[in-house]
Image 1 (cartoon, rainbow, N blue to C red):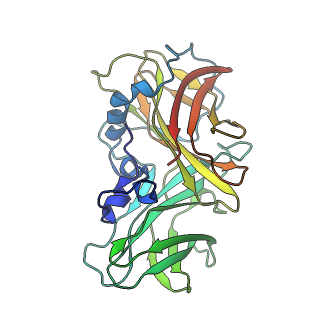
Image 2: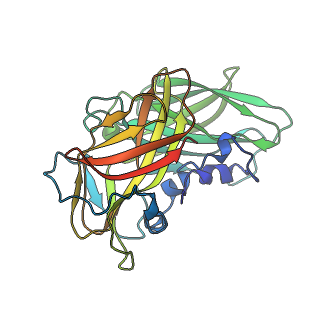
Length: 320
């Protein structure tokens, strides 16, 4: 079961979605903005997403943690995102209906854990006017930076309708953990400012939630898997892989890396180590990956959690 980015789509007033529209990409915004208990709901309904690997192997020596880690109690908010809701009044001009920022690993980095996190931004507009417009440029600046990072991204904003949802990944120069303030500026094709937003920087810590006592015992599973197209960072094609982990066994599980396999092209080994305590689920984690090719292939993408060259869990999903 996927519980993803419909939060922004709904805030944009999306009605029954049409096939292949970006607005129907079950983006992970609902999980971003809901409590960590939502991950448990996914876990209880998605254990079949595991590739049938059975019980996990005995824990292997830990090879580094996933950055700072924190434990949360069930029902506490998921801290890995920052949500900027839309206006509470009824604007008469084009406005940013909602936006969500999230820290993501750079899957192209030699050491994604030590490398600066990327900033992933999902957003959309509403247009209450009779005139169409087109979003063209997103500028993101951290703290006192007066220039920021500019990303070109075309998004049509039709009259009297909501736009589709767009997703961009930005490589900011400061360490994400040190950023105190973000400023996002959205401009149309004429360079006119459509909107600004100042979301709080998203935390980078992976969080953990104890499983409910009613959760059946089982192996490590990958849940809430999502693959989606992303603009940036920089040039070339990129896509994201977002998922959570559930350890329903009575033993700690240590993962030393993940393998991401597209339907065509080379697989990607991502050296991110995660230790999951017994009877515990993690918050969602996002990895931004580069694809060398003319277009992202259709078909099934997979992610495998590994330990000592042994596959512990695997899940598969299509590209949204």
